Length: 286
Ligand SMILES: O=C(O)CCC(=O)C(=O)O
Image (tube, rainbow, N blue to C red):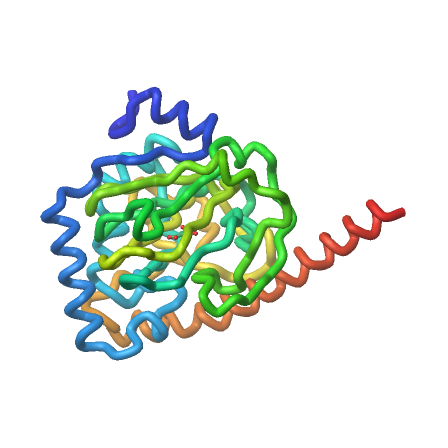
């Protein structure tokens, strides 16, 4: 018996690669997380620039969010009982913000051993078609890893502006509309993206990338994760410290160590991806 999702939602995740919407937090709980985030934003200039990778190591509110029992119940229905929070992020579009996200598959540069990886996209504000909610191509996770190119557009919210190099049929796209506190869950190979915010309201989503404890890195680089439910008998990731306060010095030291590692890993995976694509193109031209 699933804990949070219905059997139909579990099946939808398998067949279409996403589930949406899920009532994980109440509107009040979402407002409280948002208030804690905004309070920190007002006290810490460059908050997000200082914590691009794994901000849950540095911010108490975000660390608490990764451990939310309703979110974890839904994730457990897809990944099983042993769950690690591996990465977190924020996708923020201010009113009339031109920022967008190109069509992409998350797993492209992640270098993880298997697809037991789920993203929980947590809405802290309303997220709808007008303000640039996330859009997905149902069933696209069945196509496996597709080629991508880096576009580096300044308005693209992705670090490299990753863009999938296949024709995406926009008519197939489904808008994932959420009220504050609701979440969507999506598969690591699902093609998704989002348009600019054409409204007067902020659109803010927090991403939590959860992995099943058996998942490991395919590259030789070290990486860390936080066990948020169950047990970790595999020890594939270095255990992350839980911060006692925002920008806890011990957590900052740990974070700084992981940043360098993460950059080296991403560059190595991107170079490997590029080589494979060039090889694929050369072979197709023969
Ligand atoms: O929030 C968005 O617009 C896109 C989010 C996204 O690309 C992701 O969660 O991987």
